[in-house]
Image 1 (cartoon, rainbow, N blue to C red):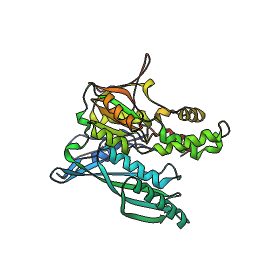
Image 2: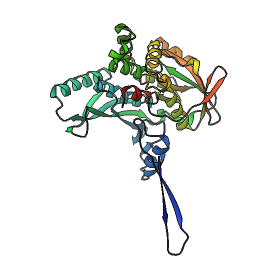
Image 3: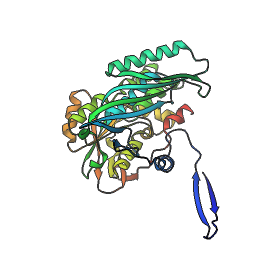
Image 4: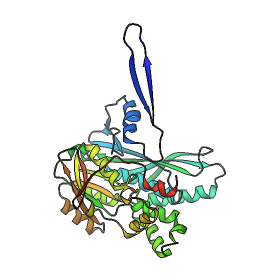
Length: 353
């Protein structure tokens, strides 16, 4: 980190020191302090139609289009993997929209291909995107395509559009002490699948092909649209899908979004054995591994919600509760540790990006 100190002299006043932090970026999410200082603070102009504005832990924006109804928007790029990039991009954005409680209508795509990219790769990717959209009842409404020397692999950015009744928008400000935190599926879900696919040859030096293929198949569980819909119908207070930064990062973001504390029982966080083995092989922390496919739900009626989810074949567990202070604590038997803002996802450590 470099720090520049500039002194400005005015004709009739004493010198004033202005300190400007200039951080060298690392791969992954932009640090929360940088996001607040250099992104959010630069956004000043406001319109009265906008209902949800940028914030830590908020993946969607929303604006009103008429009495009682709102449009919800979210955008995401896929940069960490080239495998299944098209349908992965759709699922990630659809998850963000679903976690807001909205029904997704369509997407706008930006596809940037490297020089000498093949038309056949573009066509195959679009076929997978269309099939994924059809399965979710989403329409590809338009977008932009180009070939650029600025990239060395295909980059896909998806902007999702959804709709919702204004009074149904999930709000982090509604979280209160005693509300329980429910987690669906398993920590490290997406990261495990990506690593198993990208690093199969290395993993096969210790594990069987069947084991690695089973880990790769976890990608089939990446959508949270179904559980988000169920949670919305059963009074979810706040929802957040678990992406970069893993389960610990997502929990921090929930707390930051609502300015609340929490206590999390580490032993309650569900995890597949494939994730445990693969993370041990590469010496990475599974709790900091990208986990798209898992949804965090804050609710007053956790057991009732879990019953509804499990009836639809979706595993879910109570992993903690909201507290009345700003401390975000993970408890493991008698050990207590504080959650920290999300750092570079462990996936990049494995993929060497």
